[in-house]
Length: 100
Image (cartoon, rainbow, N blue to C red; front, side, top):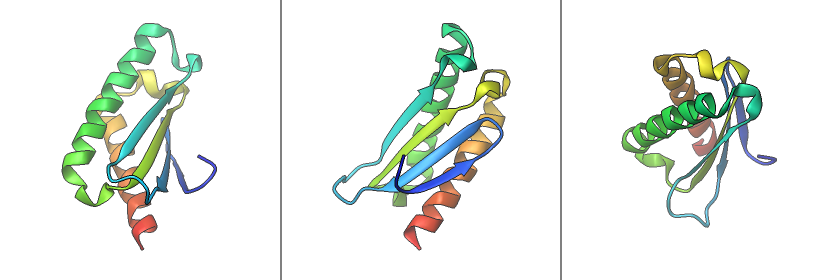
């Protein structure tokens, strides 16, 4: 998280770092207690995992990157579509910057 690109949105902060030693993409999630109780945090994590799987299908150029997604307080009340649009737009923007 110290090195690489950081892109913030309303519900998420996405960190992307090129890791040339990795052949695959690595995705991690940080969902703090400030997001909500255990049920709300797990809901956010499940949604983010589903979105990350979709990213792997749509962005084959993402190999060799490490992505960390940190959920902010309002993420539990956000819809799946809102999280999806924020995550995918942040990831694609950061990937374009990192590849260039």
